[in-house]
Image (tube, rainbow over all chains, first blue to last red; front, side, top):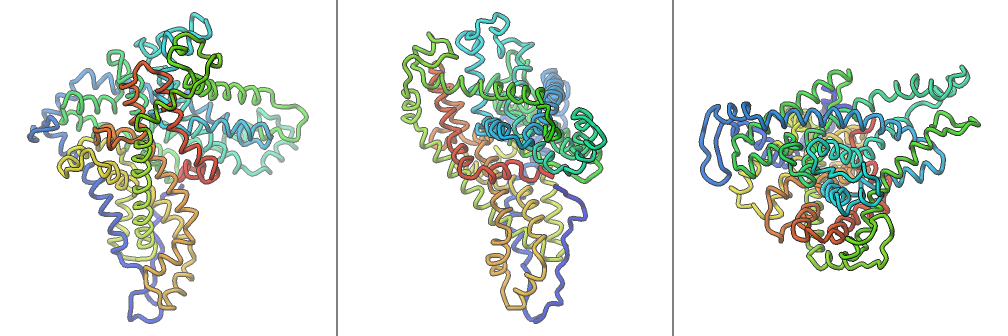
Amino acid sequence: MRRSASNVPRTQTSGVAGGRRRTGPTAWMAAPALVFFGAFALIPLVGVVVLSFTQWDGLGDIQFAGLTSWRATLADPVTHSALGLTLRVMVVSWVVQAPISLLLGVFMAGRQRYRAVLAVLYFLPLLFSSAAIGIGFKAMLDPVFGLSSALGIKWLSQDWLGNPTLALYTVIAVIAWAFVPFHSLLYQAGVRQIPRSLYEAAMIDGAGGWTQFWRITVPQLRYTIITSSTLMLVGSLTFFDLFYVMTQGGPGNATRILPLDMYLTGFRSFQMGKAAVISVILSAIGLTLSLTLNRLSGANRMESQMEGM
Amino acid sequence: MATLRGRARPNIVGGALGWIWLAIIAGPIYYMVLTSLRTQSDYYAENPLIPPGSPTIAAYRLVLENDFMRYLGNSLIVTLSSVAVLLVICLMASYAIVRTARKSVQRIFSLFMLGLAIPAQATIVPLFYMITEMHLYNTLAALILPSIGFGVPITVLILVNFVRDIPRELFESMTVDGAGPWRVLGTLVLPLARPAVVTVGIYDALQVWNGFLFPLVLTGKPEVRVLPYSLFTYQGEHGSNTPAILAAVMLSALPILAAYIIGRRQLVAGLTAGFGK
């Protein structure tokens, strides 16, 4: 998808016959969309900045508090740790998901019959909402009655979600299970657009599969890699449902990532001012990340963050 | 690998990876299906990987008796009305954006594009304030209105890109024939943009359908509960009845499964709408 500044549409010439009546749509046709967008997206966005300079418990009156909430939040070790965890989730889930998605995409793009059948089965996780996946895995990871007990392997029977060092990586693994199918679909589409002639030429030159993969497939997929990576990195900022359902931030604060920190601060501790500050930080990171990746990609591509809303 | 087609040597590494991934994908689903078919006592007694000794659909019956249909209905209402409104207003806006030269309209378009970078989650605190002030807390409208607002940017973007490809001669010949803007919208733009409307409609629907944070914060009472959120509350209410919880999880996937069976191509296109090349 291209979103360049040159997207400004061709203008309508008003030189069409019969100047008596309007020949094109009125500007008012854009009004309903503007109203909904303004009221329920733009105003809340401005509101979150305003609220970050207040103190509010969610019920009573909102009181202006200057920089109090900012100071409190920026000094809060819980938020610091949330920021660190979020960055770790971002990096680790990219490292895990990107190679698997790419390889699977290449695999699924093959025309062999068994691959087509497997590709249909790979779609299965996409039938479930994040909440459903989180709940399903939580049951499966139960240390006593879950899957780990079934195999009788000692190493496997751990309290995957209850152990502070394991919990974060367990959720990251579940995230990969949930989102790799989506990204491999992007790669599959990308691979299918690579001109066949490139491979034929390489074959004539005697290049093997390995060489072809590194010299043709990967370079040709660069835009897909950028798009998918942007979605993975920016999407990491919005993994709320899975963490909320599986760990609620625990054990302790071991999995309290930034969106969860925002929610728990606002709607459990009723410190809406601080929650607003965290929201502003979250938006700023998201915006910076998509603009930077956008710049890096050379092309003017910016991706929606709506994933995981 | 596609690259090896035509060679005698089969790609063993690729094939192995494919089957391993299948096991990773299918394993948890296999576990969930089997467990949902067990009785509650068998759940504690039997090995989770072996098919249930006395399979039963009791868990499914329990879920269906516990207002599952109401939550499904709420989800359908929220999703369908959000998407219907979105498609209508965004198609209108796209037509205006493509076919008028007015500066104001172009500015609106730039504003929408700015909205693409807003993470919806980050606005939940002011949204909560607005929704309570508007006395919409605990209504389905509390979920529908913000879903529409946040759906506008991506929907307009995809539709504008499509409407722009409609040859201008078609617009001109219609206006020469005296057709007003509404007729052009209904008889020219809508039919020609139909593939894009379907694709982006599916994308929007999946976003709304899977939403969790909005229902968590903006609704509380069971009457307005939507499906994904209801799974979480099942977990609280039937905490020890794992077969029932997993039956609810499986049931919640059925509507999307139905959509997948009916229109696989469209669903995949909708899922990856705007992210493909």
